[in-house]
Image (cartoon, rainbow, N blue to C red):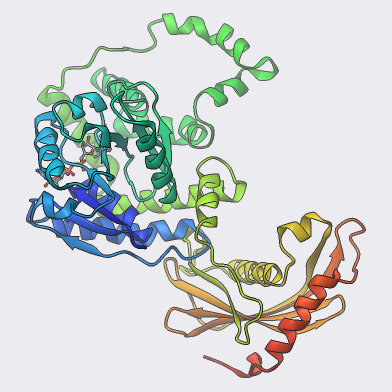
Length: 478
Ligand SMILES: NC(=O)C1=CN([C@@H]2O[C@H](COP(=O)(O)OP(=O)(O)OC[C@H]3O[C@@H](n4cnc5c(N)ncnc54)[C@H](O)[C@@H]3O)[C@@H](O)[C@H]2O)C=CC1
Ligand SMILES: C[N+](C)(C)CC(=O)CC(=O)[O-]
C-alpha cells in the first residue's frame, strides 16, 4: 500500500525530505506559501534523483507522486508522516502546529526538522503533542542518513519505536537522543567547530580555505568512518582510550580553544569571510558545488558500502529491503541487474570504465547463482562457482546516472560447467554490452572443481531446459 507523507515547508531541508520520501516510493503532499517553492523543490529533487540511486546496486522502489496543496490542512489530511521544516522560529513553528493539529490523523507521526529547539518547547500548547518528535536531518537530507530522533516525556514509546521503523525504511539512521537538550548532539559539535573557525579568521590566523583544508585532508576523513571516540581510542596506541586521556586530557585546560566566546559578527568580519569564501569557490555556482558535494559523498559512501562499514553498512541493510528476488523457473532471460551507473564507475573518458562492465556481469552471475540455489548458505556450506573465462563486447558507451539492466541466459549447465550469457541494456532497450562467462563449480575446501550438490544440479537442469527454448542470444543484437 502506498504511504503518504506531508511536507510542511519545502526549502533546503523540506525539499530534501520530500526527495527522500518520493524516491523511496512514498506519495508526498507539500505545503509551502513561497510562490517559488515548486521551482526550488524541483532543483533539490533533480539533485536527489541523480545522486541517491547511485548509492545502491539495485533500483530503488518506484517513485511516489508529488501534490502541491493550498493549505496545511489539505497537505496533512491522510498522511501517516508529517515533516515540518519551516524556518527556525519558535512562534512560526507553533502557529504551523496549530494548523496541523486541526486535520492530522491521530495515528500520524509529526517530525520537526528543528536544528536546535527541544521537543518539549515545540510541543508547548499543542493539542496533539504526543505525536510530535524532533527528527533533525543533515543537509543533503536525500544522501546523509543521520536523523537525530528526540522525543520528550510526552511521547509514548510506541511513537518513538514507530518513528525509528519508518525512518529506517527510508534508509535513514535514527539516532535516539534519550535526553532532550538544546541543539541535540551533532549541532553542538558543529557549532563548537564553527565558532573556532570564526575565531581563526577573526584573529587573522587562517582563511576559510585553510580551515577547510585542515578538515578535509585530515580529521574529516577519520570522522566520516569512525567518529571521534573510536578514532581517539586508536590514537592512544595499544594502551587505548585511558592512555589517550592521560596524554591529551591536560591540554583541555590549556587555552587551545575559545570555548563559549563568540567573535562579534561585525560587518568587517562578515565581509572578510564572504570574500574569502568567494575566492575559495573560484567561480563555481552553488548548484555546481552541490553536485561536487553529492558526487564526493556518493563515492565515499559507496567505498564504505564495499567495506560494509559505518554509513555503508546501513546502505547494504536498506538495499536488502527492496532487492528483487529471482524466479528460476522462468522461460525468459532472467533480469539480473536493474540499476544506476554510479559516479565512481566512470573514468577520464567520461564514461563507464571497462572494468565496471566486468563487475556488472559478475554481479549478474551472482544473481543467477543465487536464483538456482547457489546462494549465501550454499557458499557458507563450502561450495561455489569460480569464473574461468569471460568475453565482453563493448557496444555503446554508458554514463554516470544512466539506468542499465542485464538480461541473463543460461547457455549450458553440464556437470561442473556453467555457461552464461548476459546482455546489458539501456533504459530504452539499446544493447550496451554483452558478456559470456564460463564458471566452474568448486569446493571451497579443496579449491578444486567438483560436481554441484544434487539440489543445485536439479535447479540448473530446470533452468537449462527452460532457457534452451529461448533464441540464441548471440544472434540477437539491439
Ligand atoms: N539548512 C540547514 O542546513 C538545516 C536546517 N534545518 C532546519 O530545517 C528547518 C528549515 O530550514 P531550511 O530548510 O534551511 O530553511 P529554508 O528557508 O530553506 O526553508 C524554509 C521553507 O519554509 C517555508 N515556509 C515559511 N513559512 C511557512 C509556513 N507557514 N508553512 C509552510 N512553509 C513555510 C518557506 O517558504 C521556505 O521554503 C529549520 O528548522 C532548520 O533549523 C535542519 C538541518 C539542517
Ligand atoms: C547550521 N545548522 C544548524 C542549520 C546545521 C544543521 O542543523 C545540520 C546540518 O546539516 O549541518
